[in-house]
Image (cartoon, rainbow, N blue to C red; front, side, top):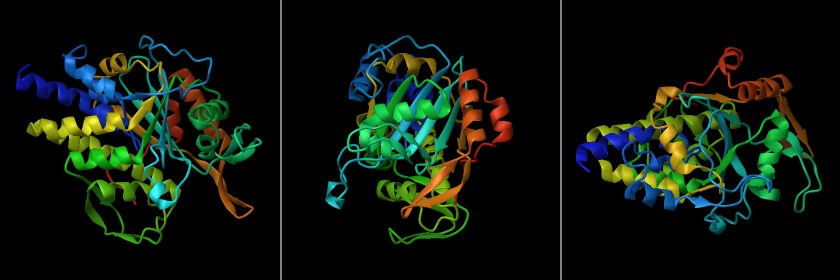
Length: 341
């Protein structure tokens, strides 16, 4: 393969790779090489992606053909790989919950973040006896399968695939590309991590990026601004990846894709390579970001929760089931990922 072909393939795969990194992220993008999906390089990346039983037991565990539309639940775990044990963190919670919907023709992707403190019904699992609590607790009590069950019930939809990514993956991928730049509208001081974010352009290495996507103290709208930061960071990572591809810095890009793949776990049935090939033409402009609309906050036994706006919940479910986000975006305008709080 010529260097020119290699460069073109990297550019083709970059958008989805860095998009699905969600939140904080993404597995399969590494295999998004238009001309070598079936080749040795694609196989190497695909083998790096971890697989586990993340869906409900009745789900098919064999990779299926790619047919749209497709809905993927992305969970950014705060301790999926156990790397925060030194901080006294046990178990895990999904601090980033994103519903990603690819349309029937795989020409456009809608990514909607769900606030982690959303007050929803979580069925009994583990030590939990069932009842309403924070949506991110589902991952702690029953793993990804319980998170899928909760989201499907809340929005009346079917989740086709699920992926879980650790913050460590974002950390290493950011360093691999030489850091990313984000623009902050107003100076912010995080009282918990004791970090000052000055207004203007901030360059983030891996450690700073991890703090940036976790920050919520000092932000005007708390977790709602943090959801936007997740999306802003993803957009910045996408942009940096494209810049590296344009500059021919393929070694860094290759390392970033490898880091993301290794830090991501998908369900056994996700057709990684076929999905990558179907989405190879996506560009950053093909991705629209949005956030949940809440119905006000509340405090129960000293814990803060966010009420889920039932009209918003129904509208998002309808958009996904009908494969038509046009009416949804008119009522609930998308976010601008080029700058944040």
